[in-house]
Amino acid sequence: MLLTVFRKILILNRVKFGLLKFKQMKVNQLYIGHICTLCCGSLIYILFRSSNLKMFIWFEKLNLLNTIIKLRRFTIYYADSLPNIILYSLPDGLWLFSYVSLVLFLWRNEIKHENLFWIFSIPIISITSELGQIIKLVPGTFDLSDLVMYLLGTLLPFLIYQKSITINLKHL
Image: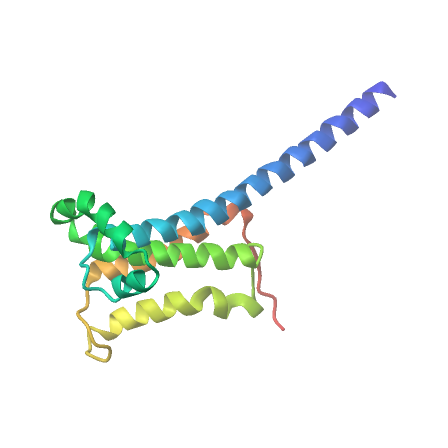
């Protein structure tokens, strides 16, 4: 009798620990996988990229420009020492990582026919627009680093969260 009760307690604790671990992983996916990568990609633009970008006009309209200029006084000198892949390609990869992480999170890490479009639409647009630059279908200059970052930003969330992802692609 006592042994049976002890076993039930152990089983309940394992289930409880598993749920806590799962909830912690979901919190990490939202805050680190989505918000942190979104902010890091944005900070690279804000702190190191040219102030001629349209977003600086938006900052001025939001009365944020003075604060950003003060921050840039400390960082803009380092822009020349950062590799181009960090300045120009990494933010796009981080934003795609953020997007895929968020969409997976919103769909409870379940991949179904109903959400394939939402999960892959932005990555496909990004990747095909970069490839379209090769054949001059899309304006711009093709950059292999951009393509690599797009691919990494799309694939890494699936690899990192693979233990919590469920694939349910049964025929309709």
